[in-house]
Length: 276
Length: 308
Ligand SMILES: Nc1ncnc2c1ncn2[C@@H]1O[C@H](COP(=O)(O)OP(=O)(O)O)[C@@H](O)[C@H]1O
Ligand SMILES: [Mg+2]
Image (cartoon, rainbow over all chains, first blue to last red; front, side):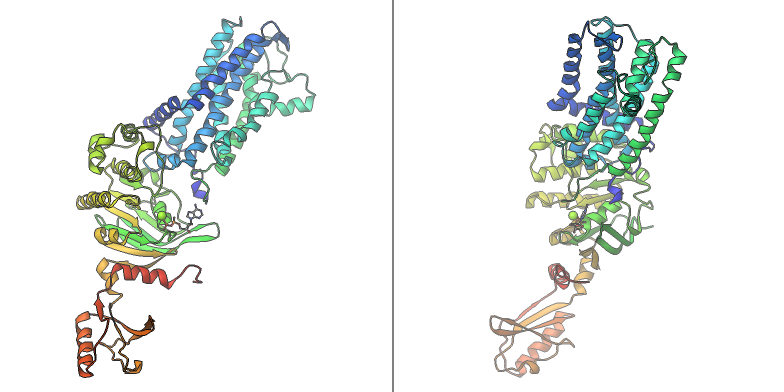
């Protein structure tokens, strides 16, 4: 039945309700070891790997910095996407999602609270990584932090929507390990996180640029280095305004994915388990 | 204005019609019970009134609002105890109530609400460790937090021992006495008999009978039965105040049954007839119809798989 799905993502919200849901989410997160590992352990693991890349070069850049800026984008997949898929699937199946809907909270407040927590975790992870890059890995400080932040916030919205859609297709919390794989793999391999896309033939490069994480990788790298790192970009130094202009296309790709995410979340998200 | 209004509500799941055109109203401060077997469509009806799903067709109104479209305006005035909803297993009872208070406009104090439902000792227990009956009380506590004007209780006492059940009835009676409007579902006849101002018996998506307990039972008539004496042909049995005997065979013997309006006059006629023919009436029974008779009667009238 239609109405057991997502009614409307965009409804009026009360800030105090959103923060109350966020507080609940944070409490539960801190008590759940496996979720805690995926938001704390994984970034540590990936961050540690960067130290092994020091001194190597890729795409004309220090490989630790290249991959590190890729991770600034990729952490979104753990903190927001995988986290929200498993949280919403588990809550749907144990009927706590139904309980959250049985009071005065609106649907968008239930989403919003979880979104705030996972988004905040991601931004904190990214901030810490920027510090590591700028100190231990000898990188520069971000040239255009505002651009990076804007890209990251847009990415949070896109990947949260994708998470809501995928959680609707995930029968139970264990299966969430599996259903996140396509998006995770596409993001890891095809979005230029670890390896530059420049060696790909033109059409494949354009296609890779359309993957959901690709815009963020481009925006973050461009903002961090102050050089044009968008698909087919020249990597030459650019100023504040030009960086934004160069990133218009990645933001347009995000806008496209927002539409796709809204559409698929509306179509697939479920509040209640499938009837046995 | 009726507090709850349901008019010709229909609700489908795919091809299956779970609610097939029901209508009823609940006035302010009234307790209305939906009584029915499993699968009758009670939960579907309640969840529609609570705004979880849109009405398939027909109209539903709660406090004058469309509960699905105007959920935001309506919900703060409702208390909802779902048939089944999860608790966050890692939270304690106290944490659960505290958390819920943050979602509720002008909530009751935690101690007050836990006292009301009889869980004051369990504040530090994690919800995963509560018994089924204790979970039900915590459910009720959360539903009562916002001092609701309208309370929906979907099988509130299922899983409770008799003592807890009676305690819950007491709480519900007090809430009704304070003016709360309550719509409750149950498959316990006694619960409906004890609590309901009015009730409806629901079966396979329809309301078969509705009214006060007295109305519902009265419509069914009273019952007189006895074994047909050996030397009396069935055709010689009397009519009692116009009611004709129906004959059933029990352990090889014919049993006459009458469905009558008013026991006293009918019994008097029967006994006079027996006296006149010098008959001994074995196994004579006379009793008022009970809610159970009505309930079994409606359930039997449309058995599983019957074409309607
Ligand atoms: N989500 C659902 N999907 C499909 N069928 C359902 C769903 N929920 C309930 N049903 C079916 O609808 C009928 C009525 O269910 P329900 O309203 O839960 O009845 P009750 O509460 O009286 O036991 C049952 O036959 C049930 O199997
Ligand atoms: Mg039910």
